Length: 469
Image (cartoon, rainbow, N blue to C red; front, side, top):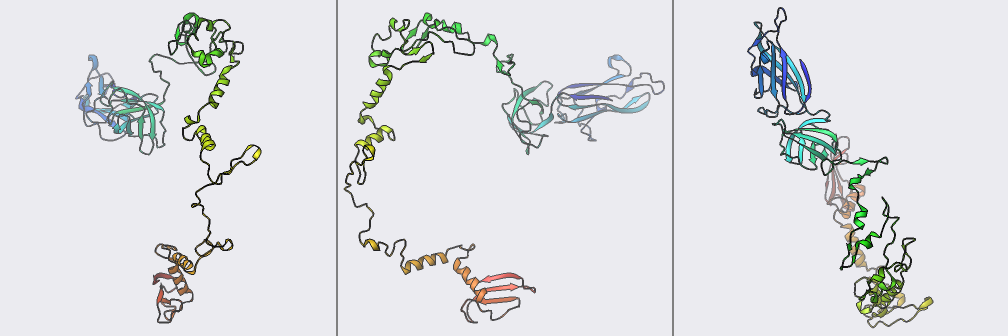
């Protein structure tokens, strides 16, 4: 018996076996060997594959006596889903005649899947090309997330595609792919999860190089050619053009740093003012050696002075008209409102050093909430927070006592008090110690209203209560 190990989905298996003379062991042919005599059992089940489609029986291969071949095509899906990744198969030959003896036996064993896979199984149900469930899989969420897989068409020897698992739900064995494969997958297709997905370049054939510091190194052929770039003419917005010779003078851009930039053009002070933008501002003299030194320090590569930029900017802020300060919540709008807006009664505008300035009078006094109908010493009157009339106090008490669901669902504090008082001090004119005890309302005579009726067992355990509250 041959152990073929793990074979890929869709493989065509050619299983050789021999027949011998029962007396001297010499090679001998056999009879009755047909496709129907090839038996394939799945996962230890005792029922062989129903169809023999895809089987071929060859007696005396190459006309060599006693040398035979059983051929099994795994891409044949006549018996749907029989050949599936993750399953084990046993192959036997049944009831052939060798040297006048009817015989048979096991000839091979194999499993279906991909070498190196951490999981070989099939697609159980398919929701979309990027979402489906597995026939078998781990129970933990994201157990195979980030791994790459091979999906192989169950009915093809060569139809397959590659995908990356972006999410996995263990309880339902649901797989989500980052993208679909290159062919349309279907339920019962084979799938093998191979392991952590490798880094794949967008352009096929490209490679990533890692230097000694574990940083991605850029090949020399992919580096930016700084010398070529700086030798080109540069045109800025508005049509201002720096000729190639000017750009080329900004030399010495070394790999990985801008520390050696030299001869950068700078902005002279008179360019910043309104007059500096006038006709003739961008003349050849402006680009002469040393023309920009007033602003840009070549030695330190920093702005050494903003010249009139600071003064002009400050002057423009202070000269801004209040009429233009209209943006809501801006500091300019608030300052304008505070300084020139309408003053309100009681507002005191402080002057320097904490000295109060003026307090304008507010004409509208109707909204000032001050009681003038009573003396200052007796401003707390009926209706105020600290002084209530008897009727007001009674209304508050009644609202509390009759608060719906105040004690339990459907029981107000007043009703609960009646029940408690009846059991605690109410009359029990009859039934004490019996199966039914009836308590009268507090202050009620023997013939008064029964508030609580308890049903008790022989041990005095209360089993039911009827309330009349």
